Image 1 (cartoon, helix red, strand yellow):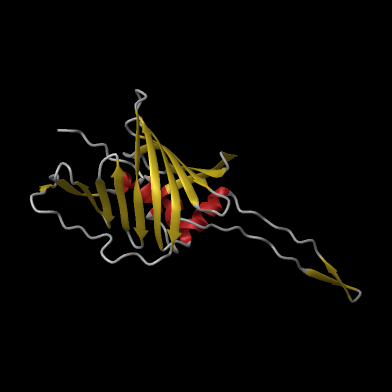
Image 2 (cartoon, rainbow, N blue to C red):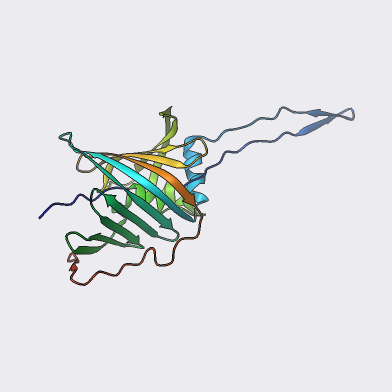
Length: 230
């Protein structure tokens, strides 16, 4: 039986500016200089997620093992508040991952297997877990779970280090790259097995209506159900 790899997995941020104020002196208004304050990458990441209700995108995922073996995956992702996430690998083999609340579902059509298990908070220190914090409470939720730190720009992106505040079973390092308009363009991560991944998002569609049933799943006849014992 061929072993499957489980691949790892927001848009538009903003910046703030201060306007100008006038000072009265002897009846004359003296305009003050306009001071524009550009938000750092941490604030832009938070703004990106705070303004996201739904997200669709294509992804490419390059994963390197500690031995240097590289695998490449492509597919699509979808996010909808609250708590729904879809990660569909199309190449080099089909695989579907769904997160619905605290349930994680993994379907492998070639192996005719579907596994379902409960997600613990410590297992959500992943790109998917970060994206699932989208919404009006994004800043509070992110700061409750992660330590953010701005990094130097590189490869045309602004970077943020995202470090879980609690020990993570999923990863040891995560960086998020933002493009010029604040879209989350790339994730770099190292997982608990020492695998290094680069996930690049493209063709993003934020806050668009999603197809009905996108996060539903009905196993085809003959599919084996695997449900780990608690």
